[in-house]
Image: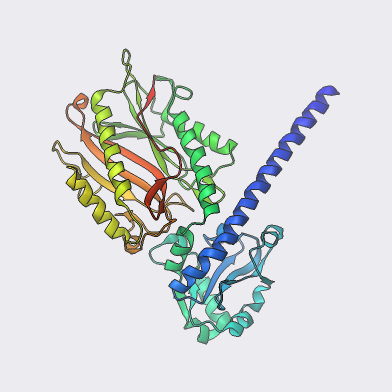
Length: 433
């Protein structure tokens, strides 16, 4: 009997702790939502000359911004509708979307039926109606083709002629951060870097026995225990050799002398991280990282420092990229023509990909990255979150002069002063004994 009571007590305590954590996270997400609706939404709607923004959702097919909007129950079709009616506040309505969590969150002024949409729009008579369709940004492309046709039919030709893409509005709304959002992001980053650094240690790795996928699955288990998500799927745990990447998250056994990298991120309360870590597995008799590998890492750190002190707000991402490469070349680094297109010279070759980060591992805001060409034209604003990502290729004598690619990546916030780290960044090559 005593054993049964003890088990029941433990289960009850566990249930209560889960309940308390769920409630804590819900409250924080409500704070973020209300802050963004109050402080960011008026600014970005007016900058983009959109006086009504309709975010359409269907049961079983939600818009990518569904978590940002507060979720809720959609029985068939529902709309979040935001209307600029003047003043400091944007009117917020949920039509055809309901539920305890949405209503108790306090973000919406009006709840109604999806059948009210036409009358609702006619009463407000917006001149430009933003819809989530986009050729360039997947996160702003939540409206399906059939959904677009349905809105045309429901609202009629008069208002269908006023439809415009909300692509830039979505980018601005998501990428301009409020303090409560950055606080949550910092919490996510703390969990992420600790999982990554523990993964590349003897706590997890036994040379000659542990495989790359063992490490990746250990990381997945840590994410499960902390109720974390990811926008990257399986963590990338890979070995780099003289011919580049040898294997990624496979059954390849980790050996002494390996250079191991981790690239992954976690998701917490609709905020997603993206970071890398690097480790060296000591050979028998070694007590430190070989000088050539250490030098390659050190060159990457110098590149990171130059990037950090060069990026400033108030310029386009393209202008920031130009300034970074100019600063790097002034310090003797070589700008690569394309990814992995390094030279045979003694100089360290560099390419950067300082992309937007936040609501996914790859965000939708201004991006100082060759793989986000449209967002290179967006202006960098204070409160934007950026992944400071770089790849530096340096010759390693221990590899017969072949170049080691050192990838460094940690997440930061842009302030009026420039780039500031949110958590302890990668300071060194981790050592596995």
